[in-house]
Length: 137
Image (cartoon, rainbow, N blue to C red; front, side, top):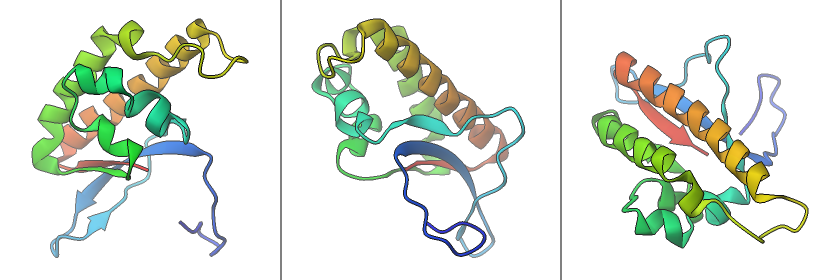
């Protein structure tokens, strides 16, 4: 991914972005509204959080994709994606890592996951209202 000056950006964090489809079916990424956060977790959370077995056990089908790839949610999938975020929100304690990183407490994970999930849910609501999709990358 390149910034506006053509410099290559290296990401250490997962980001959530909303996209809209233009008349040719190409993704267009509008500016994120003021007050909205794009952070969706750390890169390591692809497997430690969003793609872990406990998330899969909850029946999640979108988030586990992040263990292997970026997640693209098409506009018609957004309602199902929102339902999945609600299931994860209701079950945070069941999938928050424990003992993965001795520098991090369980509470740190719970707070961080809750905050990043809120960012994802806000983006999903924006996508739903705009008729767009979501990318977590």
